[in-house]
Length: 208
Image (cartoon, rainbow, N blue to C red; front, top):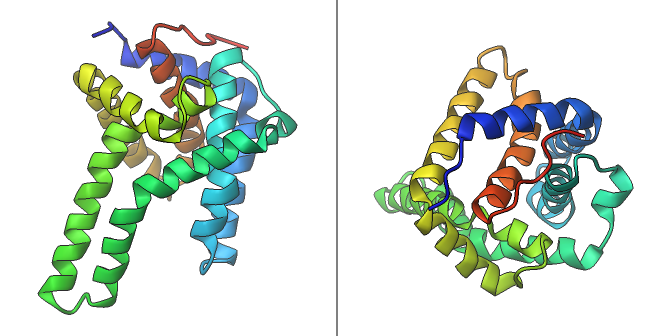
């Protein structure tokens, strides 16, 4: 297990966010706007386009210090691989939650929702690093799942501490009418790839 200082990573994520705030905040705000304007197909749009692009933008910022809107959209094949990765991990819990929601009045529906949320949490906890393995060129779609689970298992304490710190920041960011999330969420898009790079033996960018 590698020694990783979570607070230092958040500090570096903040420094990089300050330089790239327009890029990261722009993609995040766009995804929020789409969520409100097109709720029926928002999941598909965000997974196909916005989520992979935001992940790639954060990865590029973490790796090289700066990025651009055009660079984040470059290499459609990589973005599609990240989309498929998200689709695979979210498919089963998504089906359980959706089916359970429609029969929410019954105990079966509630159980399905709870089970779906638990599976989603576990897959998110152990599968968080997959997109970065794909973007780094180290893995394909399916091998990225195995690499992410292995990396998390070997560094579970560090990853779990990073998750708890993120949840804490989300709670704090939600207090002022959610305005703080405009910083916390985009900044986390840099923090996660910084954590991945640190756990795989790379430093990533410290500043732009």
